Image (cartoon, rainbow, N blue to C red):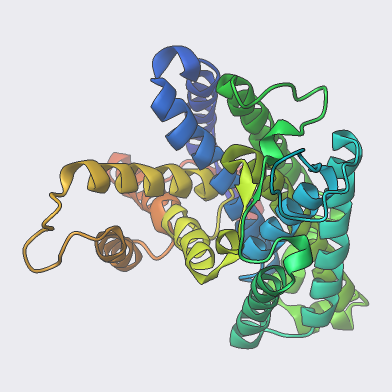
Length: 359
């Protein structure tokens, strides 16, 4: 396997520049953009990262990630909210310490994710896809049917019960933005680290050749289960941040529309590279914002004016032009520029000259 050093260096420069812009975002963008576009894009990107991690490095396209996000959010909401005198608040209203509730919600979601992963670990392809979709449907119906934990009425006030190290995110939205940004960077670095560990390398081997890896003594089902648990942990972080961002929880946050939206974001960004999670999220929200602001209320001729119609056409165009999403389009553009400029200057991943590696 070879590495294009120039491309890698270019991507690092772009990544550092994007991080600098993200850090300076409160001074560069309006409050609307900061909260409604950038913060939400980071949260959706973290959720999509859990999906792309399983797809890119485990060969598992999971539709359970939205359900896991919802489980984390509902768990947090029911654990930390309290009964308000004279008010009607849904949920268990346990009134736990917010820090304890945060840790417990994440651990509960990871535990459920491990159970889900263990059940689905021996399924592949369309069977795995439909099984994980079933998980989300079960979670959606459960939180909607059990009125004790909220039912179809929203559980409100989640953003007012935050740990002390988080602070007030209701009036200080910049604080929530930076917390989300730090979490997104943590998730990105975590995934990049994991895929280079012996576990990550063996997981990629299982992705490519599960039968051969099993014959070599690797426990395929266990690796896939652990990977699903890691994906659940990332989804739990996104679920908690989403609950804080919205301020309330309802079953629609894990419904079919939300599940399709998460899949569209991941596919637009690219299912083969973790960077595609946030690229797809920001592209999705910017398209949504532009369509909302520019399409007249009467709609466009022929195709109408709904966002779903327009994003459907854009999604179809991206898939046709670049099946690997926007990150795949970047790879194709780079390869085209490299071919025009001469032979590729690629080296083996170990750092040897290509000629030596091929001899």
